Length: 105
Image (cartoon, rainbow, N blue to C red; front, side, top):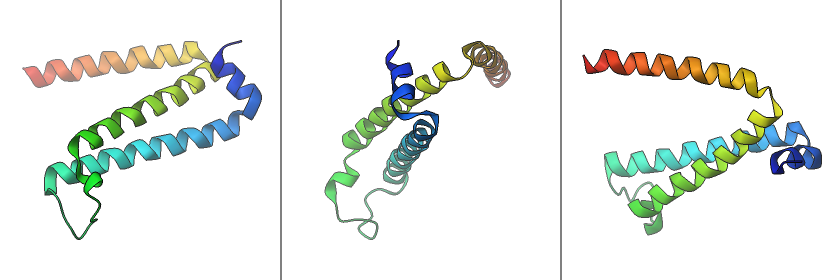
């Protein structure tokens, strides 16, 4: 039994779905903090916490949250039909490639 399947046996689908929402929210917040820093610079009215504005820390926070999201999404991919996932993924990548070609012309 895979690690991901063991998670569903231990905790069930609903808690894992909630955890996925939580991890996606944390990624969203990490990206927002990064964008605030890049677009506004340090704003003392937002926070006086110097670590909040450290660009390296902000970048690392994003990477860490991506990993957390990836783990949760991989669990969901394994729980739900991987063939349907693969089909949608292929369709979306073809569309992305088409959009990229259009923008390069």
